[in-house]
Length: 221
Image (cartoon, rainbow, N blue to C red; front, side, top):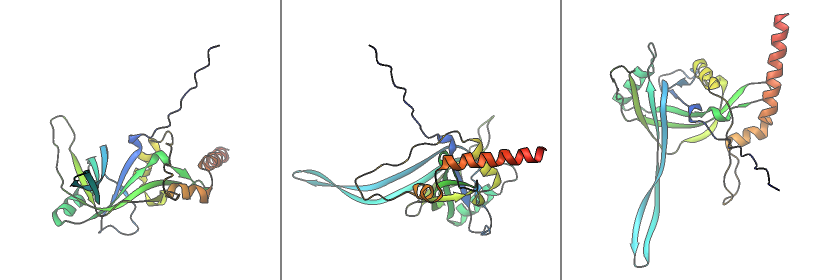
């Protein structure tokens, strides 16, 4: 008897659903996080400096400080002040606030408000190069050198510029897996802590959809 092959569901994360946001020191505290241009390829580095120590028994490795960067290839929109603000930050050596936002892992609370996990950092843009290829769009591939380490947390829809929120939601299709470890004492991630405090996201998504459907039906009558 031939056993039926079990299907494998690889619930992976999409790079297209990672969006970077920014704020500058001269923005108002009430200003929302703006999208860092129309983004193409993005990446991060998170490396630790190692020192090789040669001994008669072999080479030992001493662990040193960490170095972290965000790299964002941004295409600029007409009328946006992001480019001019970045130019000022580069010229004056000013640090900016930057968020790496993961719409793969969006969540809703019981009222239907959206939350997304993000990594926050204060960083220095190391330049503002312009790529001006023929038959192409002007864009800048910028490396943001992070002070210390980026810090994980959660953002609500109230923190995000409406255009950024709309783009992030349009890109959403599925949620990736999270959690790894076992060698240290368990410590919940900000996302796991949020789920623990607000309940399962699936239930909230269903409740939010039901509420929206009821409201739409009431308005149409």
